[in-house]
Length: 453
Image 1 (cartoon, helix red, strand yellow):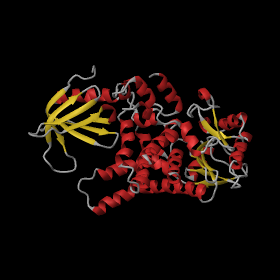
Image 2 (cartoon, helix red, strand yellow):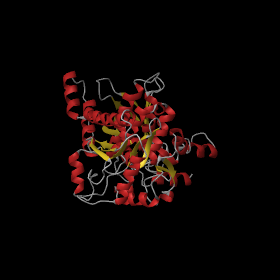
Image 3 (tube, one colour):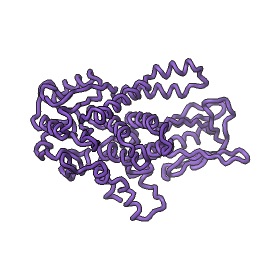
Image 4 (cartoon, rainbow, N blue to C red):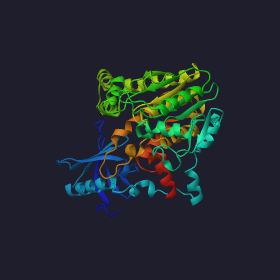
């Protein structure tokens, strides 16, 4: 509350940016966690709530004859346009929101102050709703080809992997560690999904540190072992989700992709999903489409096409379908990576799992999928949702936006067991920092967070 100098301002207008309707008039309140606008119209009790950590940016415009405009852009792309009568009040609200929406410490996030009605035991259990060991058992692991491993105990091999991983039974500790040292950020190949009908698997990792000619005996052996773990196929698809030119450019930095001459048991495949910078530009153009005021259908469709957003959606869907068909129809295992293996890799592995396994199309299954593919295996949720010390985390919002869009196409349209609420809620709660577990970006952070409870 020390950041709030003006907790209430009256006679504040809330403009409708898309129509010429008369603006609402009411009171604006600032609390420790939310901005609240209450419409003062007679017989109306309409409230607009915006969590401080849901705010991406605040803009104060020059004062006009009607008052001082204050525009709030939210992380869910919502925009609230207020007009405050006095410039001084507007400046104080603006200053307060800047501080409240950009906490200095992670401990100032909403998650550390949100206490639903539950006792300590219930809160501890909520951290364990998704038991990954139980999920792997549901898949049929351990078995004669794959086992649970604690090689990453205390996060010593890879800091962004969980302590419990599924690796080939035949892989020795020295092989795994050697492979990790040859992969970007030590993210060595681990199992994502096991298709027990035919022993084919989806594995994931990061790009190799191959450069133009560097080799690693342990990494080559690791991929050979993954291939042997599926007796029904003589090779493994290695899918690089990046455009080929991007992957080739990484070779100059000592990274790159697998050389089929060095990995005789693989068939290499580029998919061509663009990087985060291209996606962010496309998303910005899409938002501009959505903010058009009364556009013609022709104009809307033209700008939508120019944004390229639907092409990105199609590229990810095509990659996911390729994985699912390879596993189910061709009985062939797949190893997926991009650069670091936590954005595009998580997208296509998640969506392929949804196509292969109806469990992930349920609410419980979707929760397990987020836990397995995004939280424990290291998607950078902290950069997606936290807005600490003035660092705007907009760049990493894109991967989850794409998955949400495609998941809706895959499941919401065809399964009455799901709803848009079940899809939007985890993303919304992550953006407003309501639940700590959605904010962490790897198993290591989860370990630290659970110990602090």
